[in-house]
Length: 486
Image (cartoon, rainbow, N blue to C red; front, side, top):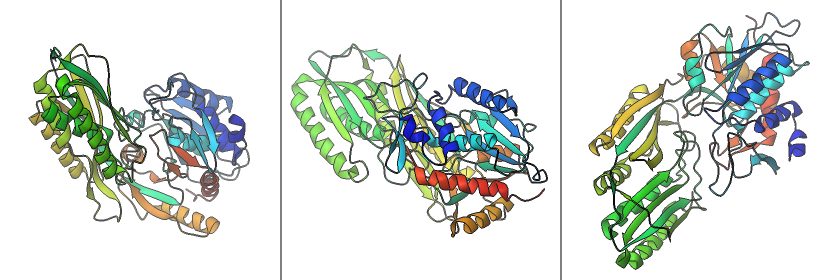
């Protein structure tokens, strides 16, 4: 499949993107791609730095005659979200991504593609190795762990960069310029449970929710997709009341910034209630498909008999867990008063997993208003503290305040209009761009974010539009050529 990708235009970008797909780079496991980027910079004879947390910085001098231009930092993140369909055997720490051309798009077989943010990184690499693009001084910053904690941006020191302008190449709608983003914070919940014996005369079932779309918990939170954990829990809660259902294990979701696509539980019911239980499961499947069928056409809810578990989660903890999940706020909390169509505040119940006497849950709260983020974090905390769980918050990061008077915004609006005949939209985004953190470290740096069109990031349906990659590249090159003098 490499041949068809390598033939796409612009070849310099797609060549580098394909190279990235061959290097395992899930969040928190970026050692191989860090070494790859270090070698890339050194092989070009450019100043290459790997800082203390693993960010790679590559600096390229201005082309002749452009030395007096403002210094531009091209910024993207090296890690990718490792999501796959449950029927696929794929090891994100070892296996390359099976990317291929599907009509107007490039996508991957049953896994995330890594266009978020591989396309942005690939474009920066193409600038670094170019010999015919006119540009001022370039600093390329490739951060680590953007998807699970923004560790790279958090760890960046204030004496690494000298850029006047930072172009974040991590947005996902061509023709849009982003000048602001939401901040975020994790809420982590933990129940401790004891094990109980399975009652005599029980039947065991596997309860599965699969086929949901999932997606980015910021970008996709307002389009009505279901949350697999909430869908699973709703059935378990009612079955516990109606059929004395007991849970042996529960699992759903995996990443704090992805809407859960799948949920699984092993549970038991009294054998004499099997018929009614299975009938209730069938009715629930119809109900949930009726409610979510428009946005989740491929969702499947199945209950099948399975091997008897050895132990169960104690009933007190089970009841507390099911009630807490049911009561957890999830989805859009408030729309922005100042930016039409922008989600201001949201929360995503991202994961649940029981193992070794513990049940771990995580949610991510986002808001462009710090006080509102703190408020929704407190709401989630209260639900779980009332249920008896231990709760902590971590990973808080600031938002990026829009600046409509930004010089690089004005320049890029002009460049886009001159080259493409229309004015791009100026937006803020309900997601955690690294610009918020980078702006805190480099407050005088003028920043903007843009990119090609990517759909369904953070899910196995992720795809990038081929035509918009060319347009994104052309826009980037023209911007570099026309940047203002210092």
